[in-house]
Length: 293
Ligand code: NDP
Image (cartoon, rainbow, N blue to C red; front, top):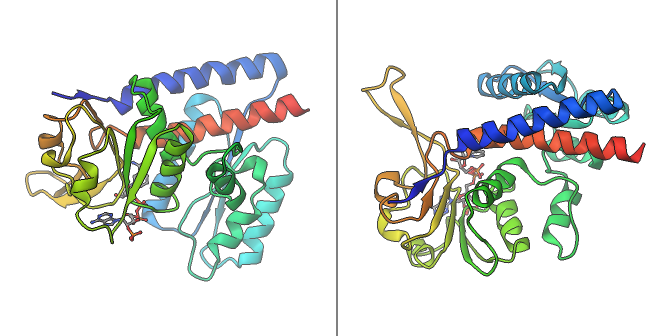
């Protein structure tokens, strides 16, 4: 049976490490890390993600800068807010909650975030550096960073291993592939046009599942002893639950946990780690800013 990687417990450990460092910065330099979370409009899911991020900041002693903008605001106005946050020395990280309303160009807004405050790691220059040999981005996107952190804290070595990433999105699949490559894995990326992904996945020592397809990866696809990180978060109908649904991953956990060496559950695996990595990026940014001044 696989070792189940408890993302909640790992996240809790990292959060207490961050809390200690935040306290130290405050005592030594009289400064606390600051994170600005910008939300435009009233999408319920976005509001809930933003609440979680803001609460996590408050819990760890990171200062929140709440920028709540109306749905009808113009693109130029949003960019003006971003510029103000870029100029504010107390703000070390800026996160613009996506998606933005249709009349606002996301790429344009994200590109305006100062490279030094891009704690989501989505600025094209940060992604570009992640892709280049011998270059280091200032920030690595949070979910990919969470996957690598879970592997390393579970004692899974990456160097020289065969890794398969299922999915190639800008926020998860692509950057996690680049991170694994930087860590000296041999990386294959599967996507919706990959024929017979099972044949590729069966060769993997490390599987990162980020396709958004409920239980698509079967136990028989997993190489015995492999490390399986399941990013997928899919809601499926479940009349036995009060809510009428439950969350499952991209991996059939029941089957795969009998074959894998390590596996993350859904929920309770990558999910709790993602916001924690955002807080870690904000702390790192604050430390860099204090060092430079
Ligand atoms: P996207 O929909 O943006 O990307 C999905 C990717 O999976 C695409 O590259 C797509 O290929 C590929 N794909 C789709 N179907 C298949 C298939 N049958 N076989 C192989 N590849 C396939 O999703 P995200 O990357 O944003 O998210 C992926 C999953 O991770 C979702 O379930 C999401 O909810 C979850 N997630 C969880 C987070 C967490 O913190 N736990 C954070 C972010 C996401 P193609 O490019 O060809 O279309």
